[in-house]
Length: 177
Image (cartoon, rainbow, N blue to C red):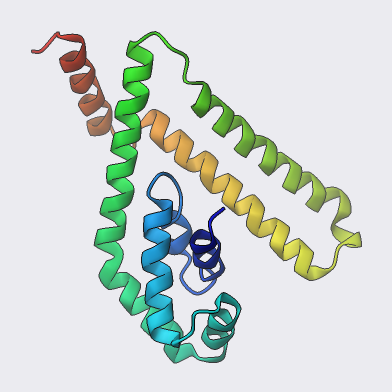
């Protein structure tokens, strides 16, 4: 994981939507935007110090949220564009008769990671310090979010999305209507 993505994820406690923006192919670019915004507000380059400064100052958290709100359209567009590009790549793979092994590995890894984290929480919760339970719960949430995104990508977010995919397939196969 890159330094920018790790730093952005550490800031997600102050603006949970950050987790959504730092996934997928646009994760690094979006993470850099989030980290740059946090640096401008805190005047610090150290991720640990940034988190400390946000924890100490609700005003800074408000500024971060306001800035991210103003950047949300740009970040959401980046996320949408990368998702669309990935759908086209997957569609081209399927049309070429190849199996989407990369996607299968991704989903399986996220599912196994989620099961592992939940198993640790269920079977070892009493033996773990509270901080470890919190960290493992956060990691489980990230794996769950990965699965949610995979299902959303695979099945589309709406009937309109499915219709668009069908039209794209028809154009690529040469069956334009």
